[in-house]
Image 1: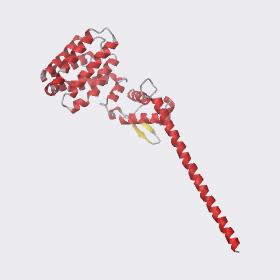
Image 2 (image 1 turned 135 degrees about the vertical axis):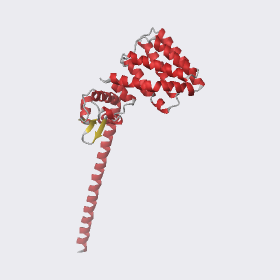
Image 3 (image 1 turned 180 degrees about the vertical axis):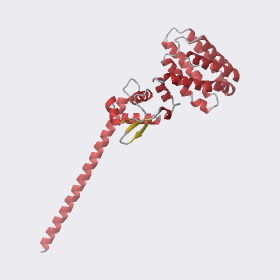
Image 4 (image 1 turned 180 degrees about the horizontal axis):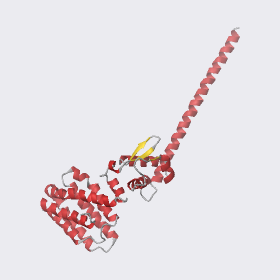
Length: 288
């Protein structure tokens, strides 16, 4: 009898051990699957990064974001309409990771809402971050370019004369001395430009530095924060063919006047000369 009980206990114990082993194996297999899925995700992210960096120096997500933003601005993708991540992947041949980065970029500009199971929902332009330099760049390459240039010129008229006057008052002497140097270099390049577009690019690089320095030396943090915005419109005017191959003498004279006034600490003359610069831009674009 005792032997029978012992055999029964042994069989019961063996069954329990088998059950434990089975559960362990199931757990191990489950963990292995998680590891495989994690590895796949990591590989997908790596592949997405490679794809994103393999487009002539521009990130793929930036290129796709621009395309979609311009389609919204042009009315091809209307406010309220949605686009899934799967549709993004299929259309542009991008990974899930890159598609998510596109969604993040557009969402950060308030251009879209991202909703689960729906995807990207286009928002009206009035809700976008209109002063963000990326949004401005998109708009300058859309059918709204003329309206964008007009709005930015009005912004420059409001901000830059005041910034120039403040720089004449507040900039340190060593910084003030840089402005005539910038103006002289710009004139030299403009008057002796034998390099065509290459020379013009050098001129505009100096022009961007000139206006950026004024905004940063104005003593107004809000003016300084607009430096990227102003730089975008300065470059955008060139890219859109809205600037002559040879800068006009009136524009060069006005830059000389701004530089001289700031260097000599004459705020009102700096204000007036900067107003002349932006007025010249407005006249060239036929806005006013």
